[in-house]
Length: 210
Image (tube, rainbow, N blue to C red; front, side):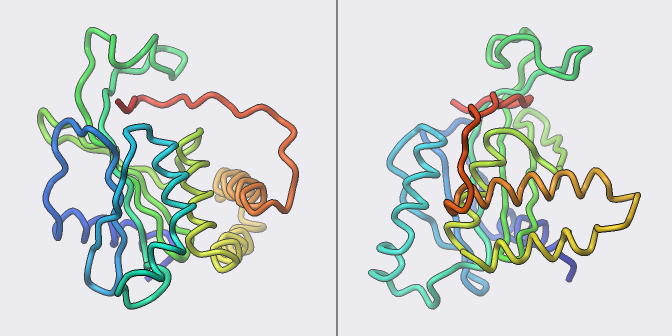
């Protein structure tokens, strides 16, 4: 199975094997996969980035004090809900999605796999319409890449390096290469290998968690 499809395979399996997330959630949901089993991770905050930070910080203690078969899962899924709204002429939502007159409720489901593949699925709750991307950008994507490094360590870093090597010299993958280099820099920052002297970019997306 290729790196580009492993995360999608995990996400499809999770969607079939677990109950559908509610239309509106009080707090994010995190699942981990061990073999064929999906295990829920306790979440104690309704703030997206705090939930991810706590998940990263507690990963070792939680696993060593449980009966999980291994210390690291083969994938994790992060789910939150919010609003989606049509993009303006500049490719961005005009104002807050939750205040847009054409807003729609949606689920944001992000799956990251141990081979550094990833996929994000936006699923509108009114009609089940969905779209996916493997090239997410912005604050949430960066935070999830940092979690990927926290979960899998150097093997996650090496997996991104392997993807870069595969894309090197292929003009059809120039956008992929740019995205991968950005991910690599972010993982290096998360690992403390490079200093982050720049302010964080604002997160622009068509979804907004609550």
